Length: 324
Image: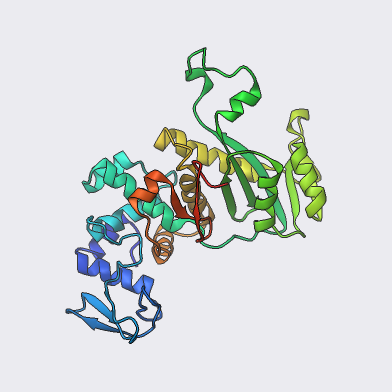
């Protein structure tokens, strides 16, 4: 197993070796037909393609079919490098930088990175327990950079210009991040009930919305009032989720500079994956991401956002910019 980017490039010098490595990561228990799921397939065309043995299918395919690499004209070797750079760099890599590193256009690099983000997003709900912290953050343009006629008159108007994001984290464990159109009790409640055990202790700030949810659904709720100078109550705090917000915002400000609300969820999923796998090595993080590369993201769906995969693999139609 390689330990760094240089060893990765050395171990995969051509397309054949890249496909062999991808095959080993994707089909650990044997080749499976991506069309019908049949477990028996024939190897044809000098190990370049496969053919399903099912009488109802008989379709031919390669290791790329049914993955984020399908129908891509970019060599798989460049994909491997892009995968490693995106998962290993703690704050990510911009499409402009990736385009220069692997010699593709910025548009191609941008699409590649969004395909990678599609691959690393959580396919199933992450369950959190014990001590769980929740907080919200807002992402968008700075008020001081706007013309005075466009600046908000009140704090409420200021928040409406930005995209709200909910975050929940298990102390010392994993994080779940969800963008939303409106920061209201219904959205926060749905997120918590999906990911947090009811026997957990919910720790939030003193926002009234969290107090209502905590009293209604959870065994214990602790509110830390930052406005009164409180940063720890009964040994509980919100430093974990605040730490994640700082890393996410450093990633947006320092690497991407500008993120549209339409694609903000994908950037959050990317950062959450790196955060949740922070205790393992870069090579292991790379291989785990590669093992979850199933699912194709088409360019027209990405830019139009009219049809996309739901949060956990369910297809939904969207009328707005992002999923609630």
